[in-house]
Length: 450
Image 1 (cartoon, rainbow, N blue to C red):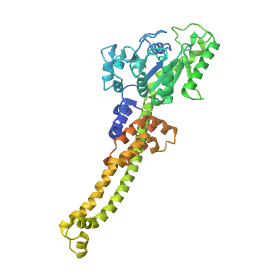
Image 2: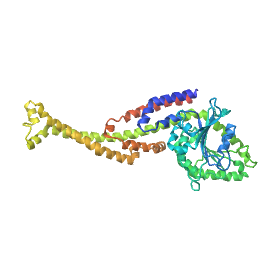
Image 3: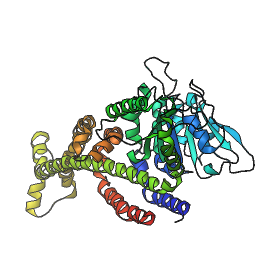
Image 4: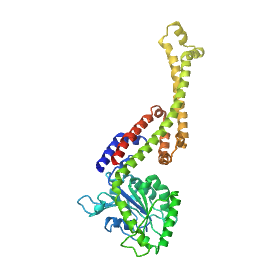
């Protein structure tokens, strides 16, 4: 299987068939494009003493990142192998985030402060990183006791988690899940950004536990904290690891040898999961698009019902006025000399006698258009913008979670809807187009990677 060829083919097909719909329904084009760009990504998260940089250095086989139990780096650092003749170097954040060939363009929205805390390190003699990039992140802080950052840290890790094929969340035995930003990431940010199968939990520095009893207590504390943060009774697996270069001898030390090797193998196998994760992301975003279109179709259906009711009233009143309006005009204004109905019954209708009847047809229609555009449709939009979730059945956990991500743009779309949008809406046709893509194209690609 040629993964790069399939990736390029999928990108072309998604762009051709669905890109206009993504734009029409206020989805950022970068959201779908960035998933299809560049290399497999591993995102490393954890507090500053959790061993992220130490593990990265071990994976790369070089001392790339500074290590220590105190904070050593306050930047997001993308680490990968150089693929040109310029050799090892550091690339500043403005260049990395501004490069359209890389998947980080969406980070521009987080401002200059983030750009100053973002960089890429291109490494020589790093075969493990030829088809892989690792993102080291600033250590998570306890916002209760430490100074807050000057940029939206949670928003940034949410964006990076969307791009990542694997998220490694690391803890140390002394702060087993007690950091405020860790809580927020696990409770809120990661569930909205990454599938569960892409997140692995690691407790590092287990050699600092003097004996198995200390390790069990630290492990139990972490399990308890994770259960509170995730709200799950069934706990995910937690890998145990340590740095062989820094480890001190202890009874707990030997318990992590096999798991450490398995953890490294899992991280380095990330490229094999790339295409599967791309399909998951594309599928997730197309499903989110479908839910948005479904909501707009339901809203437009209600709007069209109002239009039909208005046209029914306009038609009935218009027909009445077509035949009788000139009689009222003649009674109060003295003209025309004879009514349209009398002329019609007489068998001859002068053209000039059609002016008032035609006006009688048009006036109710104009009145209905005015009432619909200025009152009934805006009122309907205001009601559903305030409670857009009532437009459809959110009858599965998947639909409920997806709705949380799109409800803002659905409300924005509803608020911007006008009478002409209701009349000429093509949401049902768009739904059919999306369903064909999911049933044919996506299933075709899933079949290719089995």
